[in-house]
Length: 574
Image 1 (cartoon, one colour):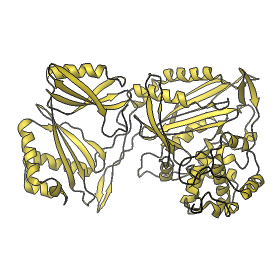
Image 2 (tube, helix red, strand yellow):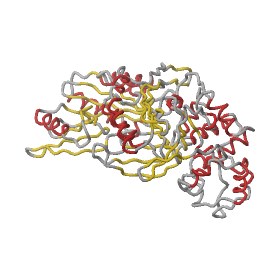
Image 3 (tube, helix red, strand yellow):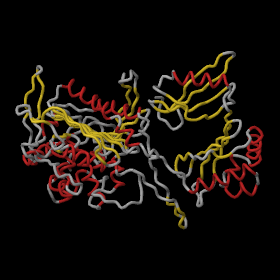
Image 4 (spheres, helix red, strand yellow):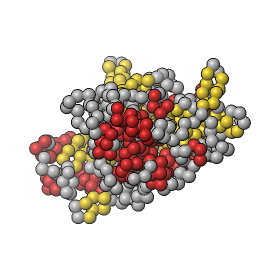
């Protein structure tokens, strides 16, 4: 999928280009990895001894691969298919968040509303300290209300009637921490969000979600009422005790349904994952809803941090660092390779499920099983490793804006023939205060004396619409020119940096090839030369299986020393 929008100037407004995928064979390369991914999920299925499981891969809005294992019913041995309906438990929370945001977008509530405005039973709620402000809807969405973590207690409350919940609310809710001071996963909090949806909309939570979210998305087999699912399609839930499976009856939809009552099949869940992926990137296309694209993107932003962890070893024997938190009804994780992994699991007695997607990459996965708390997150993480090794799991690339290209053209004119009037025409009012004109002219002249026959290599590397860099390919190596434009209209040059990088001599080149081959980050290749004289020092950007990394080479007598550093723009060492 490519989103391409030409950048034009209309008065003082910039309409900017949209990131797009550059590899035209991307889908085929990713699909080539599915046999290996099938093996990963089948191994997980066998090891967990689940009765049945299904998983799917979504690329650019389409379900491109689906695989099922085992049975939906252990007695009849009826096989799991794409139409088999599983309970997805806490993955329901994202549906609840969508309902809240739809009501917010319609002007019917604010995320900053006190919860007691819509749940009057909490008007007299006793807070842990006298200076605690009222609970807000946003805190419920992000698990930061200060309520105690309530797994597995909350899993057993699914079917309680509204009157019972009201009685509990009248008795008050104990706090485990001061509201808004940290992350504490609360099913109770999402049950309250379900009540808010009902109160604000004037409909039951189930009716509102079905009418405003499920049906507009075309999720015809998704429901909160398991009794409406044909018995020939329903996956029965099971537990495992002493190596033997036993059936676990499903709970009916009740006042806690907003936290974990949803049921769906693979076809619908693929469509749902595709809907979330379709929110990126921001663009001018018609917004089909049922919830605004901007609001769906808002769900997928980190609003509350939860933890930093070092996990492993993974399938390649390496440790992995990651930071995690919560958006609105969705978990958000960052690691050394991916700046944002959006996901959520679901676990109830009898079921386990997981969904995960990479918004900037257009790729998502999901899996459902009918065994207690069998959340298939581990095989999905392993599947990401496999997809990454294809070389096709790359994010969208941002095309250079007209403002960047115009500035590049002006800088190239200055490279060819320096003139004070030329630099003055593009300079912001701070430029010469921070970087005197005479010094800048001297830098141009010094580099031109060291590098000859220089021409743009044909590529531009934008970081955003107003910052980027490009390389000049020269006989002796390359010159990198990076710059940032100021928030003026039109955007003017506020920062400029020029750096040369010489071609490596034979000894340095041989050392680079040797060190790249044994870099401890999986298979690596040289992506770019960033600096150095090519004889005593060289800095290279490597693209490795586990992410980008810098490699510094330094001659020390008759040997060359190697060190690795975090690559610019990456969150950590891979």
